Each structure stands twice: as C-alpha cells, then as structure tokens.
Image 1 (tube, rainbow, N blue to C red):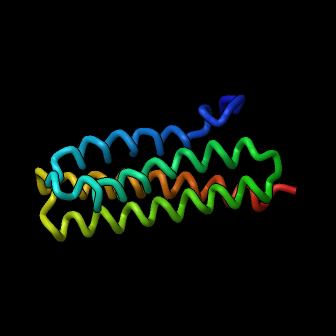
Image 2: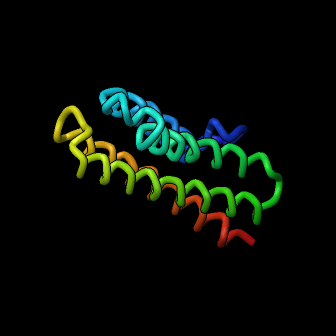
Length: 123
C-alpha cells in the first residue's frame, strides 16, 4: 500500500473527485430552468464529498476525521437521491447515465465506509 502523505492520496478523495466530474458532465444537459434547482443541488452535494474528505483529513483528530467522512457519506446519499429524482423527471440525456453515476457512487460509498471502519477500529 502506498503511503498517505496528503488527502489527495486517499482513494476516497480520488473517487469523489472523479464522481464530481461525472456529475457536472451529466447535469450539463439538464433543462436550463433547473440551473438553480436540481442542477445546483446535485452538483453541490457531489462537491461536498471530496471536500469533506479533505477537510476531515486536515482537522487533526480521529474523531473530527470520522465526523467529516460521515458527512461526506451523507452528501453522497443526498446526491444519489437527487440522481434518482432527476432520472424520474427525465433529465438525463441517455438512460445509462443515472445507472453509471449510481455505480460510481456505490464505489465511493464502499471506500468511504471502509475508511470510516478502519479509523473507528484503530487503537
């Protein structure tokens, strides 16, 4: 395993960053009247994931780190819900887009959960 020297070395941050890019690309095709609605909300929730991973890493205590990782996980679930709602409303340009986003989100969730468990079990 590679040494972690900064939050950018964390797989949780890296997968979150990839997810943000995918969300921005997918929401570019949303209706213009959703610019300040669902488009902004789903983007904000996605950006919150790697942002909270980074902030938690920089806080300096395990308790704070875990708290921010849990916040990142909550934002991830919020984003998933918004992707599902956008799909229900027919906002995606192709039917496979929401499925792909949810698969990426699932991977990010597994990584976050593993990191949280790892931190919770450390002495």
